[in-house]
Amino acid sequence: MHKPGDIVLTTIQFTDTYEVKKRPALVLWSEFDNTVVAGITSNKEMKGIALTKKDGAIKDSVIKLNYIFTIADSLIIKKLFSLNANKRKEIHKEMLNKISSFSS
Image (cartoon, rainbow, N blue to C red; front, top):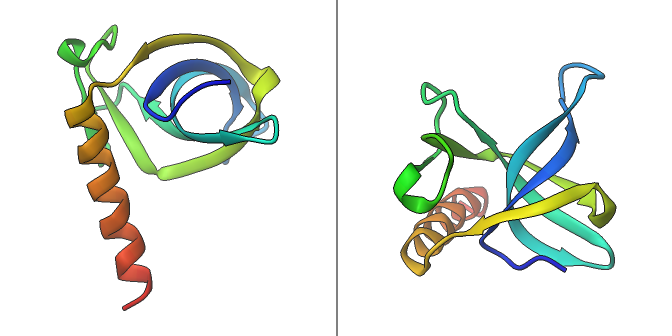
């Protein structure tokens, strides 16, 4: 079972096509043999939280908190690395900001 803050390599289906590819994703939480993840892209033009080589990424990327989905644990190929506490706090804060705007 993977932990929140783990960056994993997983098989995902894109939302706009039937195409399936291997992509990195951030584990948000995992339970009942399913894992909720946020997508990661190397397209730095996209909005999200920066994920740098210093954080452990192979290349500078963006964690897309607007691209959250649930996958079966069996689709996770491997753990790549884990985020440090500061980066996890940054993600938590941004997610709370997004959720709090829902209740306004």
